[in-house]
Image (cartoon, rainbow, N blue to C red; front, side):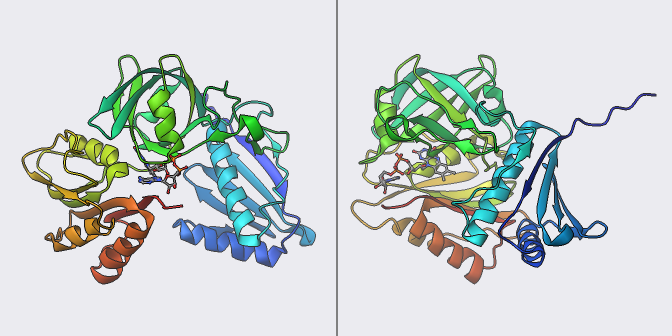
Length: 352
Ligand SMILES: Cc1cc2nc3c(=O)[nH]c(=O)nc-3n(C[C@H](O)[C@H](O)[C@H](O)COP(=O)(O)OP(=O)(O)OC[C@H]3O[C@@H](n4cnc5c(N)ncnc54)[C@H](O)[C@@H]3O)c2cc1C
């Protein structure tokens, strides 16, 4: 019987500014951070096996080389981006990116990028605009992650020039008049038939995305990058809290979790009347927390008063302003014993 090996795509680069010992320590720490292992693989060679492919570290003759191999170009690109990011930050050399050689096609958009078109927009309540998009390859955003980066020109009305890969495998983002915005949003509703999906943009003061969404019209081109993380928590008993930016994710969670899941949900909004319809099963109770000029921390104060979910299927899910998420992490994880497996606590925006 003929068996075919999976196609392997490869990239290779030197790391000019670290010693072999530094590189081993660096990759060992990073592997541990992701619950992975940097394993020795013969003389002067180490390997991290990840769900997206392998990272080989070669430390021959005092030079440090990296090899990445993956079953597809997208996984290869994502692993490379992760390595670039890690090395840049840990060595303070983010201004001297690695020179990769291999199987990423120069001149093309990154493999996790798709250009799609706006098909319609509609107001949801008085503080959200729902944008519907469709286009080739949009199905990739349906079931392997809840979030994505929305890419659109900073200068309203200009024709977008998309990011591309250069000869060294780097993502080149247009600058100046062609600069692009790339905030993170949530896939709210999916239509597999068309195929298309909706995302809901919260209309806050001074938000370029809010301005973009308010002016978007049928046929406008927009870029999507991802999917990038987040999924429906598996829980029997759940405590959920979030502000406007998290309402799309929370709504999708409430529409997807089993009807048997019990839970309490706190949704923080600025004013009475800002509520939007939220569909949920009878075993979930939803309470709106009206800030009315109070600090965003009132969401956490309210969540702290609720009964904590207990037992094997307990889960805490909270997404809000970064400062609130930081305090929530301290409370739920350091004080109440939740961990990264039975809680998702994320900062979705910050005051700048
Ligand atoms: C995983 C994830 C999923 C998200 N999903 C959604 C979603 O589905 N819908 C959604 O609306 N948002 C969502 N967000 C939040 C969104 O990415 C941020 O609000 C982002 O800052 C919006 O970008 P912007 O370009 O409009 O504003 P920015 O350029 O980031 O900021 C412009 C100004 O707006 C302020 N600002 C930003 N967000 C808020 C806010 N919520 N309230 C008040 N002022 C604000 C900033 O402080 C700044 O002064 C999500 C974020 C994450 C991390």
